Image (cartoon, rainbow, N blue to C red):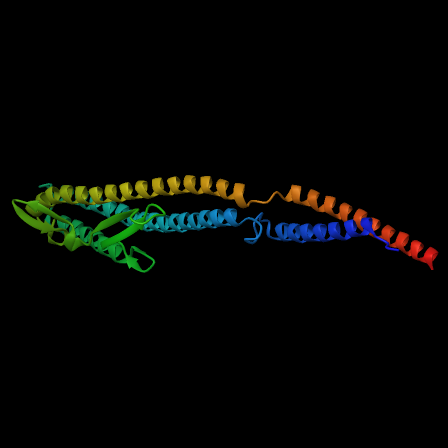
Length: 276
């Protein structure tokens, strides 16, 4: 006589399937990823990895662009200081051009004039970002996007006293050439300083434009990254709440199937006992 255990065979088959589902679910719960390995979804994993690589590219590009903004902000801070010194030097030059002043008066004004000029030189020397002097003729390339070629060429002129220049009486002079110890020299200094202030203001405006361009790039990259993140989560994101519900369901199903298997074994044992 042949004794078959259909219910037991069903239970064993289902237990194997349930165990496999529970192990896969535990891996998904542990990694919080719907596709922790290729066996879960080959095509989905390929797309998810591509999206993740692009997201990481945008993240690094945004970081690089922010470094550029920080460098340019440092440069603009130095330019602001230089501009303030030049404005004060112009005030002194206007004052020294007054014919009622004595030579001693102009000598005192010249002393402050020299200190301000030296302050500009120190500002240029000390304005640094990550060890780079950004006011001594800086050139650099900053990232504005995550793809090749999406860059911004930045150039900041040398603003040391020797390189801040103007034309007076058809002759080129620099900041170090100015002298307000005489009424004529002071008058010429006023004319030169107007041009020099404009030169620094123009350089500062350019830096502001660079910053706006980089900040706009950062915003665009953030928007793109947000969209990619949403797409990535749709493909690879795992619903933890649903996962826990599925885990509870599988555990109940496991307990039920184990009970069926146990009962089938009891029934087989009873039949064998009767036959014995």
